[in-house]
Image 1 (cartoon, rainbow, N blue to C red):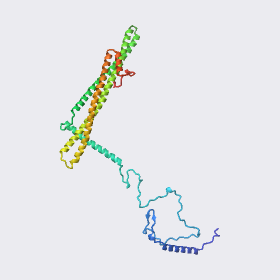
Image 2 (cartoon, rainbow, N blue to C red):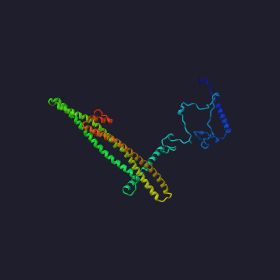
Image 3 (tube, one colour):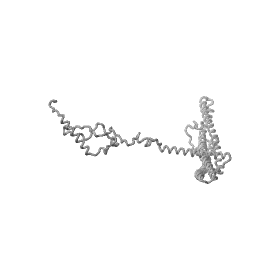
Image 4 (cartoon, rainbow, N blue to C red):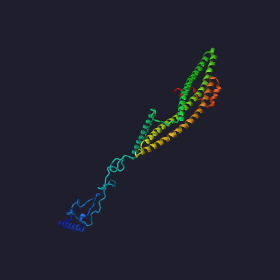
Length: 371
């Protein structure tokens, strides 16, 4: 096959090169000046200073076959589009991290979150307000105890509060004694139950004393039954007195404590306002006086509201106490009198009158008695 190919003359190739080079120079001379042309390279502009000189372009060889043309575009790459290089322009700022960063600004500076800042500021304000209020109240309390400060006194309300506290102490003493009586009587009933069982056993083993043991066993069983009924009435009495003393009265006294705290705050801010009013009314003190009057008005409103609440609760407590204790004292008297008089029917009627139901196994004893 090498022998069949015709050799290409060397002179013909040199002529073609000279002709092509001459035509190229003429085209460049007819076109625009190279100094005015610029082409963007990766987002930047190539100026005439950094453009390479093209006075002597490299030789370009023309293909022998006229049908063959140079490619007008680059061939398709096998690299997927998603993996192709996406280089941003040189003049654009490239962030060091993603746009969704926690607490980072556009320049990489750390900016704390606004909600956290607001929460911290709110807690600091609450702590500041609490500290100032505590200081003022402590100062007022010490002044009152040392006899240097004045306090607001409602003589009628203070007397009612003192009566309530004394009443609670006395009712607590009644509750303690009633629980002790119930506990002791529970053991008495337990002893009577054991004694009746012992009499019953001996009546079966001693024929000569069978009648006597049987009589005593029946008596102890009746006493045990009536004792269980009386224990039910006593448990109901102590439970009701406990509710009245440790829940109803305690709830009213809790409101009284809030009232006394509000009274202390009221007097503390009242003293503060009086001291500011005695000073000069200049541009420095006027804002302080206005702020003190505003806080004093709030304390006064709270004080008046709690004073009204205490008055209402004391009134309803007195009415409730009379109603409840009238019923409980009547129950306690009738049950005790019926038991010790041996009137079993009257004892049972007393429990029915007050809707008291004996639970099964009443002789197991209430758990609160043994505490």
